[in-house]
Structures are given as structure tokens and as C-alpha cells.
Length: 317
View (cartoon, rainbow, N blue to C red):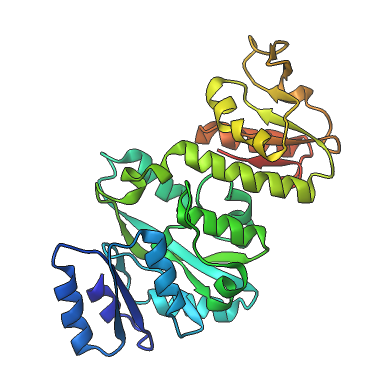
């Protein structure tokens, strides 16, 4: 990671290297680098959690732009230069990410490799805004933002949720425009001990509970009092959408393509075919179908029906 920073074509940077309780000799390496490069500042914390370390580093920044990086990833030589240029060219953007190369075994970790492929397809501000309830639209160590964004809308928060995804959802909800450089600028290594594999805050239930809160705020802002219907009626779909009611969003029915389910009632709510859904001016549809192929088909079907994504329907899984 440090070697990839040292080879950046943009030379005007400062590294805030936060040590939050490392016990593996990392500190000796970091201290040696800092002695030879005044652009490296060492911040020592005693066994701080990730959110505490992130916020301490954020508070110590002095430049107008903040780039994230993790200790086990590698930046392409022009990562910083290209992201700075993207923010200069797009003055309305508050944050810019990039594509990432999957630094793991794509065969053994096919699910994560598929996530990276999906991630790399969300590039424009509109794509990112519409995709935000599907999965986290950024690789955390690939982003750069204007420091004024975190000063205006707050930094990382601790809780039973992924701290980076919560940050993107909160900033997007506040109207921050986000885009990406449309090529890979980072090798995102997939180590067995990464937090997304080992920490309970990254379990699927935590993601869906977090999404529910921000879906509710979006519906309050743009739903215009319309009924909410859920696309899908199986147990996984109902579990994914289960957190909505805690935020005042009570679905009135389900739309499903399975003929045997159509006409039934689940928990007092009717199941209809997607073609039987009320008109767009009466309902908002939340699609919790996780299969990527099914998601694509639903988007095509709802669009054909005259429903506008991000207004009349949202993909949420």
C-alpha cells in the first residue's frame, strides 16, 4: 500500500497513517517510512475500533480533498491524479470513486467477484443514486471526497451496520452528488480476515436493516403518499423487506411471477402478478428480488409499464 502511494503521479499529498492497535510489526515499518518522507504523519491510537480510527484520521486532515485507502490494497499510479481531475471537471460532485480490480481468487470467491463486477458498472451519478439500495455502490478504499462534505454532513458513525455504506446512504440522502472515474484505479484485495467477512456489522440482516431506514426517508420525500407494494413474495423477500415497518412503511401487497402464488394472501396482503399492479400514480414498488437476472427482468418490465426507476420503483436487493 505504501509503495503504491509513493509511486503516485500526483506528488502533492499527505498521508495520515492511523495505527489503531497493530501488534504485527506494522508500526516499525510505518515509522521508518515516516522518518524518510515528511508527507507521512503517524497517528497512534490504543486499540481503537475502525470507526474511531477513521474519524480521528478525518479530523486531522488539512487538505481540501480526502482520499481513503486501506493497508492491504494497492493504488494504480495515477489514482489520485485522475480523481482530483474528476472533481475539478465536475464541480457539483462531492465524492468520486473508481472501478477496482478484484485482488482475489475469482473462482473460489465467485460471489464477491460478481459484486465487484456489478460495482464497476455503477459509474454515473444517476446510476449510483438508483443503485444505492441494491448494494454499497463503492469500494471503500477507492473513494475521494471534498472535505467540506464530511464537515457539512458528518463523518463515520458507529452502530450495527457497515460504516462505509451508512456514510454513502446518509450523504446521498442529503443530496451529495457522487460519480466515478470509469476505469480501475485500485487493486481491492480479498483477504480472509477482512471485516466484511468477519464482522457481524456486515451480515446481510444489518445491510437490510440499514437500507430500510433510508428507503423510508426516500419514500417520505418522493412517494407522495402512494401505496407501497413489494416485488416478490417468498420468505427471503419478506425477510429483506421486514425492517420497513419499523420506519413507518407498511406494504399493502406483493407482486410475484409464480403462478401458484398469484391470488393468494400472505399475512393479509394480496399477491398479484406484476401485470396486475395498480398504476404508477397509485403505488411505489420496492423490488427485493436478489437474483441479478430477475432484477434485470423486473427493471425492463416496470419500465415497459411506464414506471420510472427512482420514482415509481426501486431495486432494493
